[in-house]
Length: 411
Image (cartoon, rainbow, N blue to C red; front, top):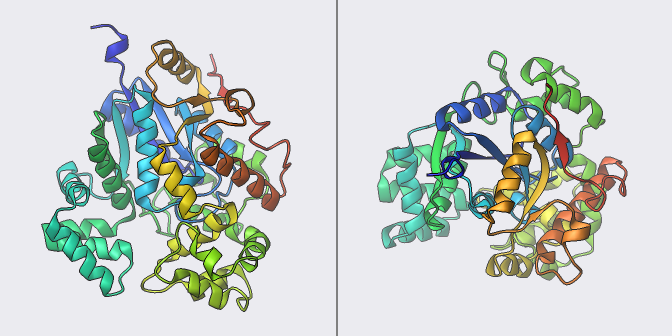
């Protein structure tokens, strides 16, 4: 067997908003657990899974990743990155599958027992009749999709399994495992137990603080250096003013006020009457945070409400998402790499391993009639809108000008 065939490549799916000490711990544990020669990160672009903008743009955050040890960073396109956990995981897993060389998928979890997480993933992937019936029943009671799904798993596999679905990292871990099953992937899962505070905890533990905690500290003007690697701090200083959801208020309200209920109903996350709640409150809410609080309910989770705002702003409609999924539109957009990442890209290209295009320059590699445009145009617009709201150079920071960042290792 050749050396090439024994390469171990670990994938990590992340947002790095910002890259902190907990992320560094996961990356180091990933190499130790899997014996990986290379680590590839699939990272959300400028808008995130919970329906919020990143505090620093995708180019800065990809630099953080390679400066702290990731070898190659690829962008998770907006259509998948700013979407529910199922599509977030689907897009990321299929990118890793599409590289043709990833041997392991590493993820953090509150419950690192792969047997437990795998059983939940199997129930939700196979969707046998008892599960489907329980899901329908819970939905009819007015529960959100996530709560209905948890109830269905409890009724199908027991309370112990359902309890594991109420933890943020476990939710995504289960989705990753589910999509490994659905895509019949050969990638092996590797779970890293989350260290320190939980995903939403607002109190640091030792030198580790959650990304939520760090963003709140930044908002409050508190120092975050003890909880992030030095490389992250140096890059954040270059990034300038941090970006938050409220910075998009004018753009979001302008877009909402252009749309009636029929137009709102076409946004991908709309449905089940959510568009009616937007129509009811969007003219009377004094600000964006107030609108979100007024629209959300037991049935409509806050994250779904926020995702709908940004999907509406970018024009991610049901028809467009259906086209992306049905036509299997996907690519590996390279944001950053180091020397090892460059070596990995050479192997992928030389041995023709990838089943998806690897993109470094959209000006040269994507034409006006390219089939990938319905997906790529969303990423281009997301960058333009982000730069506009953040007060960045709309041309200089645009996807047409920016190039992948090469992190040259120090000798």
